[in-house]
Image (tube, rainbow, N blue to C red):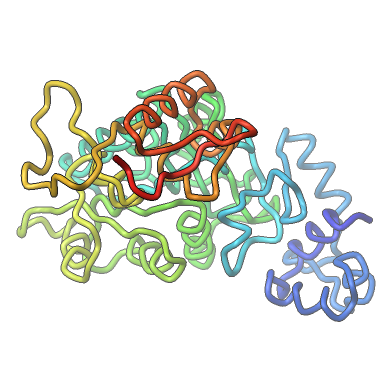
Amino acid sequence: MTERQAHIAFNLTERVGSATLARLVAASGSAVAAWEAYPDKISRAGGPVDWEGEERLAAKYGIDVITPVDAAYPERLKASPGAPLALYVKGDVAALSKPAVAMIGTRRATRYGLGVAERLAHDLAKAGWAILSGLAVGIDAASHRGALNANGVTVGVIGSGLDRFYPEENRALAREIVKSGGAVVSEFPLGRSADQTTFPIRNHVVAALASGVVAVECPARSGTLITTSFAADLGRHVMAVPASLDNRMGAGCLSLIRDGATLVRNADDVIEAISGISVRAREGEPAASPERDPETPAYSTEEALVMTHVDEGGVTIDELVRLTGLSVDTVNAVAMGLRIKGFVRFLPGNRISLLTSPR
């Protein structure tokens, strides 16, 4: 047994999560030693833990199983409390580590909500952001479709084992996500069906994988608000799309805005909230904020995406390609433009860093 396999084995049990495993590893010295010493090797299904059979079944279905000891495990999730001991991934594992925005909302969406979700996801995907959602009907599905229509990357996090896909009506959408270079992911072992306990757990993963969470449309009592609460606890940016006062399906979004969530009108609002950078209006469009402080730098969406990851210590071009999801040529061109404008400087080793005082 390897450390990776020990994590898979513990994930098959009922009572061990990341915090408990950390204590067991501290006492035993390794996950393997902890497993060998662990007395309650009972699976969630009630029988003995068959981690070898789980690996064989995942391979049969073409599913990658990654754990926190694997290089492919997303860093944002690994750094979050309660990180899953294993992730089951169908599709491109690298999609989970791309700069991502979570878009969430009600299953009983209005035409307005569906339209906003699809348009916002499309524009964010065009700007280089991966779109995360829960592959539910309603706002989730519209968000995934918006990203797909932009030929972007989208990731669906589901509340069941990948072989017990739920909801059935979105199975074709899940296949399209995988085929397009995205991924469908779950922390639940194979054979686990969805129930009312699995969705809050799923929502935590959605919040942890993203840099920010946008509530597109949700009522005053909604699972969406559980996700935004997780996001706030994790230090993620919480954003919401406003609704009309008489739209009960949007009452939760209005409450979020009242309580301090960033009001979202378009993709630029989302990018600015996450990056802290003012985004220049697209060609032919009016400036989103004519009263913008003239001392605040204005960037294109691609420049804003790059600048989100640049600090005074410096970052390599290769790292920017990985972090932004942009091509090498695009990152090089953006970096040169930022240098000409006086926002960054080039360092040895193909690195760029912030200038402390832009000219």
